[in-house]
Image (cartoon, rainbow, N blue to C red; front, side, top):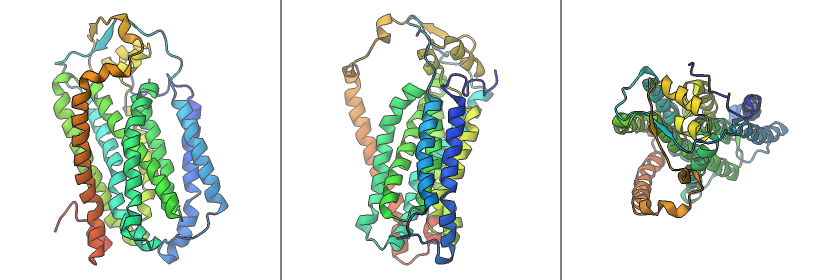
Length: 370
């Protein structure tokens, strides 16, 4: 079965998704004239009033994202199977489809990590253009990282409502929309849009991992997750650093936000290569599609596990209390690592610029320290 069979066949409206994506893209393009008009002043837009095209573009982006979200909603599900659960054999071999999915998700995570990684390379330019101190410019990464944390929780719910792949697509469309940060003349508009960018980036990361976990055989799951996570993190920081060194000297710090437009569209273009989770399809009562998805990965004899019907009823929140201790420990460890990791990478370029280094030198410190 071809990779695109399940692309939108089970969604509420294919037309709504594509129209919404096109409208969001048009909304972004309407912001480009104001950005380009500032080329003779070093692309400085601070204090300039937003023109009619920008205001119209913002309205189109909001409407387009809403249309996209509606189009990605699954159709009314069939009766859910209450007596079986399909799962691939634990020792199933990796196929070409597994490797292709790993490659696509690695690209998705590179693009995802680029978003917060870019913060460290735009704050020096923002501080200079808006004439603000370090405490004020710190609101930008603070807003983005709060959005990342919120998005991680919200997208977990959306992944259960829309599906894994559809949630990744929604993040991709939001990446396109939030590229207008590059044309916002007001600092506070930048901070608000940065929260939305962080929410989309923070939402895609756990959903991509969840999809990989549900597709990969247990035998290969551990090293695959580590490999894809490492490639995504290293590749994302490397890409942000190199693009900053290449583009900022000519187009200023704002160009880093406009990169959300082509990278978001790239993810949408790659979507036919991303399958829906067989587990989600089965939960929605689409057993035939779940079996076909597993067959794409060379699994034709899935394990059928009998599940008591009560397991498909509403599960109270307190049902996870047995994992509460491990969840708290892992959350604290993740927060500690996040503070150290993002703290160094976000403020290192700013510190170098404050010492008199050029933007180009500050941007290349991560891939080639010297």
